[in-house]
Image (cartoon, rainbow, N blue to C red; front, side):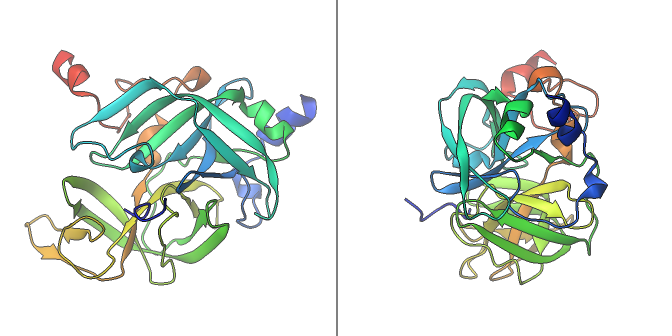
Length: 271
């Protein structure tokens, strides 16, 4: 995990700007948080009056146990909102809750803010849109770190059937080509499709020194159980799985049709 070693008419027009109008990827919507990166994100059906969401990694909330899922946990965490250049701060955002977080199957967290999407846009930026579609190999992507104010450019190299790191297993993870050589503090950065401007993943981890399946040294495991170690390879987790889970006012309904996020154990038992 790459966190590891780091201690209204106008608003409506802006909000409804289609993703295909994006002409280039920059720091729009990105945030910095303690030791990690993140971004203000929305689904394609979100409304300006909905509470805004900030996406990061589950391990940026805490190192969670395998199988653990957090929902609706109170939080007052703050986020520094960047302008499009990454050189200036537009303001401070504050969470009211961890709406969802896990390190099981994927490594993602969504914080619900006390500001709406319209209020975030009034600060001079906009939320990034989550793509509802699975990304494709070979796509031109950007990993945008609010913590380091650094933008990485590469391609989606492929997918890992399973990615194992210490106690955690993630599935269908995104692997980057070598120029996205992410480092500590880039955890939680949005992975953006450069053609559409949509978020297709959340940056997650890198194999630091070639070790096999240990913390900070993830390994890939294929369908037959064969293990591959790629020293220096960096990975993200797909985010289309979350889109169907998020409804009105950014409420998470994990039983919604098409929702691909893991459920808490209690919900699995009830289901």
